[in-house]
Image (cartoon, rainbow, N blue to C red; front, side, top):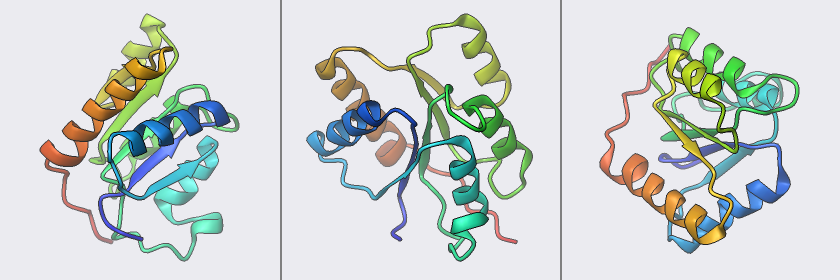
Length: 148
């Protein structure tokens, strides 16, 4: 597993495919790990369940987190990320179809670094992913990985 990976937490196969296509179209060639529900995302981040053997010194450069997820929703995932010493500084971008003001407020209250509403149009979505990639993977300086 390479450094500078992206964790995409998305349960909708169409949105997953669109996001992966937009990343590829914009030459964002980082490894993308896909979690399809909140439990899978937390297992990956905390090295539990099927990810118990994972090297926890390699963390995502950015996590793209949908809100409406099965098992554990995105806001609960965000709260657990922020509550853990090892993951609390990881950049988390809420990438969702929700335009609810309460979702925005709750996301930022829980410590989201950004809230991006998924554009419906593929060209607009692709441009949003391009800008997201440039900012979070090129310009932004990620926090150091907390060991232990």
